[in-house]
Length: 509
Image (cartoon, rainbow, N blue to C red; front, side, top):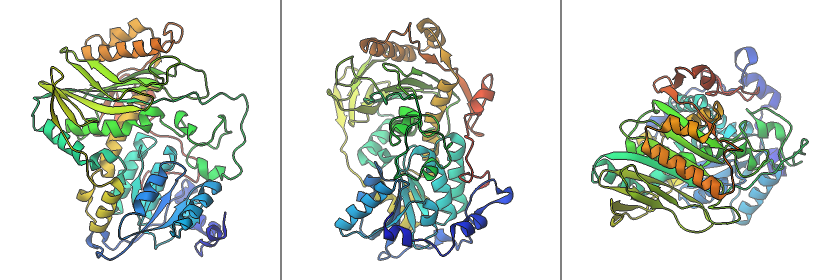
């Protein structure tokens, strides 16, 4: 830690902070209650700088950093990361760009600084909710990366904290900031192609094996491992890399459906105009093609039984075929015989949303409308401000309505990812015939499963030797955000995690 890092601490000692912040019975570390002076009635002047800090920036956090340094009237004043090497490097890089920032290893120390107006957080998933709740309690606005939460329960707590403390909290799901996508969604919702039949989202992105270890690995000396783990168990490091590969283990990550899925599933739910969670969900998947320390599926389909039109979401982490660097392009045939496709040939990822309607389909990723014969009939132009600029606009106005993606929308769309994972996690290995029997009444679901099989076969995966996991259909009470029915006991246990003291989100935020 550099000298600037060590000097920027509040007069309160760590012991005093912990003492003042502990809630009754010592079950959680929370922020002292703050008396608010109606912050939503206080509109900043046009010349008042917004002072922003970025928390967690080894990877995507640099997108936030670069955005804020380009926005007029915004001052990037602090960085925070539990890895001192990452922190010091970030401070130095910004100094070379004539941007002076303070460095913090512990986010709690950063949040004590009353001069900071807002934070952007791009930490690992397991920290998103706690940072957001603490920041709201510390009277700061928040832009939080996808997935906004690590589980459904804590996502709702984020919404409650934002409302209770009158904070502007944005989910960084940047599709809603794209004017072309907004136009495409309006076009569909106006019925220009007739009623919606099915919405398909997909993420085909190469994910190689994370390797396998047979003993605990050494945590990098630059990392404060206690702070890095935070709400998650402080377990021995049982993977080759601490960073990034946390995505593929359940205590800290949510798999690819949680990593990229929030972007596509947010568009899917937005197109359908659905204000809540689907009444049923079911998932099929597995970790195929290699044996490693990963726990999350690298190939998955999740079915969301919205009415009158469902969502089908697909994840593929393997290439088009074995020993080939190219990724699949989405190509599907609907139950009505319409051939649809989206994506580009090559090794790059293909992610997107295809909305099939009565009279054609919309490739929302590429902003193109096709008729049922595959003829292009309309194209939309890209444009719009970025999510950080939109966030700052709302911070100034104090109007939630100015946010393109308020935390409530982010919570609901992220919850779809969690629902799919929960079905998968309580499922069991099943034969192809057993899976077909479950989905045989839905031609679109069967078609997606057939392509799933063909994709794995092209990668040399024998599903008889390594059968996929079939998750059960889970029934969801959207108003309570809890499962009910036959599998409710097992499913509801995964709505929330066990938090490690003192990194606990309280029941009452």
